[in-house]
Image 1 (tube, protein in one colour):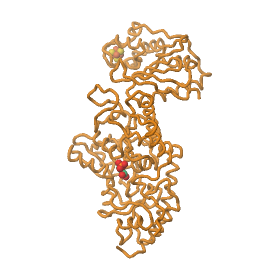
Image 2 (cartoon, each protein chain N blue to C red):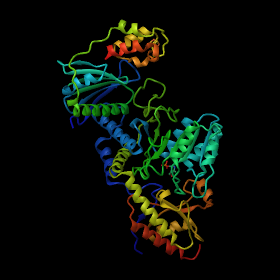
Image 3 (tube, rainbow over the protein chains, first blue to last red):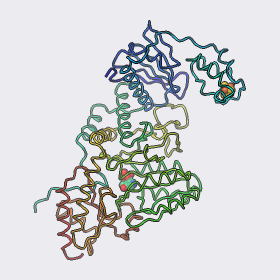
Image 4 (spheres, chains in turn brown, blue):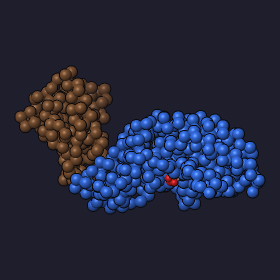
Amino acid sequence: MFLASIEVLDVDICVQLADKFVARTRASADLKEIMPYLNGMFRSSVYNHGDGSIRFTNDGIEYTIINDQVNIAKFSNRTELYELLDWLKDLINDTYESRSEMTPLYARRKPVPVFFIYNLLPKTNCQRCGERTCMAFAARVNKLEAGIDACPLLFEPEYDASRSKLEGALG
Amino acid sequence: MTHPTPLYLDNAATSYPKPDAVYASVIKYMRENGASPGRGNYARALEADRLVYEARKAIASLLGAPRPSQVIFTCNATESINIALKGYLRQGDRVLTTGYEHNAVARPLKKLEDQRRIQVDRVPCTAEGALDMESVKAKLQDGVRLLAVSHASNVIGCVTPLEELVAAAHERGAAVLADAAQTAGAYPVDVTAVPVDMLAFTGHKGLLGPTGTGGLYLRKGLELSTLKEGGTGGMSLSPFPPDDPPDRYEAGTMNISGIAGLRASAQYLLDIGVDAVRAHEARLSGLLLDGLESVPKLTCYGPRSAENRIGLVSFNIEGHDPHKVSMRLDRDYGIMVRSGLHCAPEAHRLLGTAPIGAVRASIGYFNQPSDIERFVGALGEIASLPPD
Ligand SMILES: Cc1ncc(COP(=O)(O)O)c(C=O)c1O
Ligand code: SF4
């Protein structure tokens, strides 16, 4: 097995969100080799080949990996942390197993400009995405903190064209 | 008189013996770790966290639960059922249940009848525990919010047709709480295949763990009001319990020594497989039912076939007080069985054995066919004694 375990080194409260936690953990293997594959997998990923680091968000949880160090942020309790570590370990091992069929992505993704995103949104400010305005939502999508699937209007037929443009731009 | 080798046949009360790994794990945790999980961040506390997580994960996979965080640890099935009923039911709710529930279900429901004016209705069933499904469906029409049933009766031994009940309840908008105290670990339970909303289990019976362990499986997205509030290790600034399971329901330092043992027993069961345990116990139950049939003046209660029952049989010998039968078995034969009402008076009413009850023999994974022979032989001798 490529990655046998991930050990938790520290758990602390999250400075951004009072009811969430962050953890520092250490993987039993250096994860550098797998990063270009993870980079291709997560829309939100920010990969730095030189540093051997990658950051991505999945289901509201933030992952930062530097060599064998894995930092996880915004989880709710320690049980969830271990569930996430199990998930990550399986993902890394599965990726490693099937890496010959995958294309590694070495490039750093460029953020899509806020205004470009905003222009393609329905601009109703209906707040169904949980943001106060379409502009606020666009800013979150730009920072990769939200995905366009949070805007239900975009999935109505009249926005099909805008949606596919957004999907194209966001990768 | 020489003392006979003890033979324990009260596994429905609590299982004995436990797999060796259970004793070893409890001691290992207590001697070598000893830290409280979910709180500190020194290495040992984090190790204790991992231990509790591994226990949760093993239990989740035994129950077919998708995620470990859906398993809440409690100190036994009774606590789990109390959390479920008192956390779910609201003023004036209607509840449907069976006529063979353990007091762990019946008494909290009684209390809620008085306190929250809930209305409790019971499904008619036969003395063999067979439920009238037509009646279940008819009674569910009346805006029932919860169906609370044991997965198997600890007196009659019958297995409840959970799958049919869950389908009928969900079709009519009622949630289902299953009391799996008698089944978890000894009889297949799968909350994904049979999507109950809540499932209470105890750690010390079929799951082969220490007493003082148990838990509640909660369907994803189902949030209950809490039975107890207190420290959960995290989010301490908030005056309220956290929203997320399992911490929401686990205030206070948990029974981690017990959980260390439960982790080992759950792993033991995962290794051998619950199906293998079930097959072994069903075989012994078959031998037991056949053997009891050969004892004169003995009446067995519950389903005739070992297929439809868990590894226990309740019975009486005509002219013999059940209490005295169990005393004699212990004193003269070294055999431990339980007599009386087994905390389930409703089941005994159904059997017509209230108020004196019956004798109940219950099998465990470590029993062998020779144990059954020895037990049946002893009963034959007792039955031939003059009546009390
Ligand atoms: C059907 C049933 N429900 C609930 C319980 C309660 O279990 P515990 O005593 O572990 O809380 C038992 C056993 O005592 C039982 O047999
Ligand atoms: S849901 Fe879509 S349309 Fe509504 S405010 Fe959010 S981004 Fe704008």
